[in-house]
Length: 100
Image (cartoon, rainbow, N blue to C red):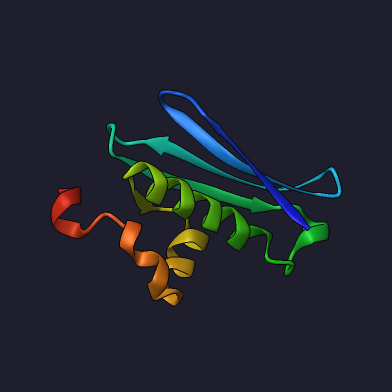
């Protein structure tokens, strides 16, 4: 089972995934004002590649955004590609008119 822990401060945050107590991945973000955050990096430990770790961290980010009325700007290539593949997650994306 993949466990995802959320760490957040005023400027940055991350979602850290672990499997059986071992660090499996990390997704970092930076706040862009009070209402949105930028996912800027996703990494998965080599031993856990292909096990859905990245997607679980992204789902945790989406859940956090939904529960707190925030939106996401996915700059990280992994996050951007995952949002493009999953229309059901796109409700938390910043639309282009808001981002300007």
